[in-house]
Length: 386
Image (cartoon, rainbow, N blue to C red; front, side, top):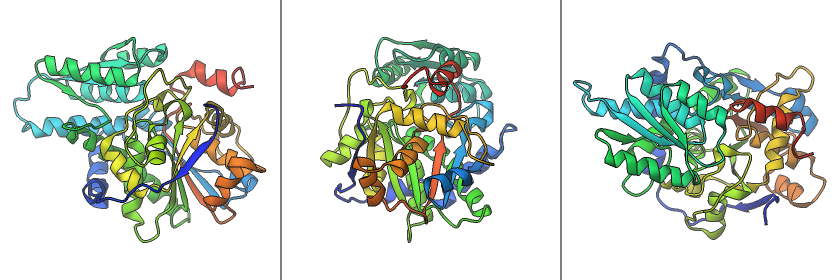
């Protein structure tokens, strides 16, 4: 049954994930950020401190990393795609590089980032989107120079199509933010690319007076973002790690099911959810290795939680800044509000279990802005989920 808040504490058998964690070491993160700084469009995205909301909810502090400002693309995904493409090209030796065609599947943000990066390097890109994808997101990808289309299938079908066409195309390359057996190098680079965002947020938080977060909430589709940021915090605070929770939509909760069953699980079908960026059914195997060892809780959430987060962030309290956060970006805020305002039931129990209280410093990542402006207004103005 969907439309329920479901959670499980991570009791997966522990394995050696040192190789995967090493991808997100501080040394690697510094190298990744130096690469991103080479773009003229680079500047750190804002870390918003929501003290008014924190007081209202009864926690010490709430921080939101606002990725709607990233490279003018309204989402964080370009960090991973650009680093992976540059890494692949560098691996060719840097001289007499042939004309390449980068293939990828996306709900919108990753594909736009890949198209942007490919264009910057004078290369081609082909992007496939799952059925039901936003027309506006499709057009934004095309504006970056990609050949893009919406297929008759879900996200994982789009991944398989991109991989198959790349294999049949001269100098075709798959740039996908998930990993499977035999395809790990590029997803590893993509995950490392996301580290710039976590490194920025950590430095910005310390500059604002807090030593480290006590809680970090990470939304997940295939889990590349969640695994990357979990890896960063596991390395940065290995002696006193923050409590972490991975959040997914009920319709595509492959990580939650994997944690519940204590083994890798896949979700299939249409996966209908407003959280388009999280509608993925096959976990990134590299990320799952990190998450199954290091994440504290896995949570499956209904769409109304994301909608609540969008509305809360768009309606600041007191002197708090407004954050324009899309359906996949706001689920962390919605989750926090849901837990802290619950009188009883699942929310209250999980709040107590996670030790969310007046001493808590919570880090959230708003991974996208209004990448579909009409959908954003439809939800925030209340024409849905009333």
